[in-house]
Amino acid sequence: MEAKLNRLIEKCSIREMDPDEREELWKASVARYNARRQEEMRAAWASYHTGQAERHRCTLAMPRRHVPEAKLRQPDARRHMTEHLGRLAALRLGELDPEEAAAVEAVDAAFEGRLARIRGEGRR
Image (tube, rainbow, N blue to C red; front, side, top):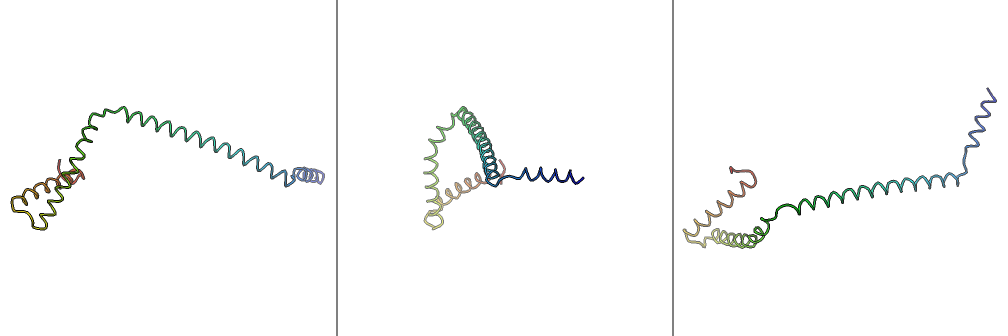
């Protein structure tokens, strides 16, 4: 029994490494880990950007007949809204006659109703 114990102790003492050797093995292990992780990150990056390119291709393939029309209407909508807000301010200040005030209130009510429908607050 004692002989077996001595052999086991000898094996363990032989296995003990020099601290420099242990550090070199540790550095090699870290380098392998970093290389593997970098490769995984590169593969994930490539996969993401390949998918993103496909999503952009799908978006660009969609019919665009409504886009130019909407872009043409945008400046008009902005101008109309600015004018309407100016008339609303004049209404609040009491600067409009009753007929103009009624027209502004009607437009404002229609606008508020449209916003409510967009928000899902009103009936369609």
